Image (cartoon, rainbow, N blue to C red; front, side, top):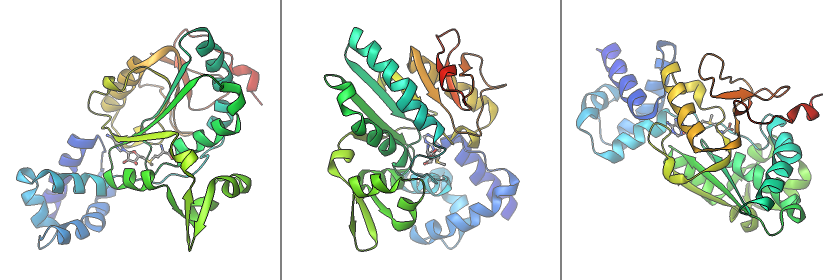
Length: 280
Ligand SMILES: C[S@@+](CC[C@H](N)C(=O)[O-])C[C@H]1O[C@@H](n2cnc3c(N)ncnc32)[C@H](O)[C@@H]1O
């Protein structure tokens, strides 16, 4: 019975989020869904599984949200942020000045906001370079709870100690008790909204850079291929796709080419690649 219910829940989660909960992860179902079962008045997770098919959308959202893994930290992996500042940004600024004076950046699995806020901090530090250009940063995620936290911009001591340079902490955060709040100046540079990577996201409009990091790892190959194709469609021809350090498009898509020397950085196949300049 338990196995059958775990199977039902796994199927449900995969259908609505793409997240594959292999049998090795079935312990997560019990630990993460027990509080949800209690919150919605079910006796236990088995009873919840049974009612899931006909459940109201707030229960469905809560189940999916609980099964997402939202770990993130400021300047995670460093390299993409260094490449953003030193290569992508100057190049896109030069293009924007010749075209529409706009740069659009999308963090497609923004979680609790550390990734888009890291980009905003870099942008603010380089403000003079892009004067007159409208730069948008859009952070989306499937998880309502993560988005709520991202919008508030409130972090724990542990979170601000992970990857955030101390001068940025001093410059952009205010401490209140044990919490750290990001400044309004940084917060106002990022727009957050809910978006499921399994659903059409073309309405977001064309993007110059898409950070889609540490989310494809949870999907099966077919879903990864579909999502990468949709991201490719939303990217400008010479735009960048940034994946997580451990992620690759090998065997998933040949629409994009890896930027030499940078794990996780991709451009449309055939687009000019000048990233070799930054190779160690
Ligand atoms: C591990 S976090 C990655 C956060 C950030 N990109 C980073 O690398 O630090 C993965 C995020 O992907 C989100 N996610 C999972 N499935 C999703 C989907 N189908 N659509 C949009 N976001 C999804 C989760 O809610 C979670 O916040």
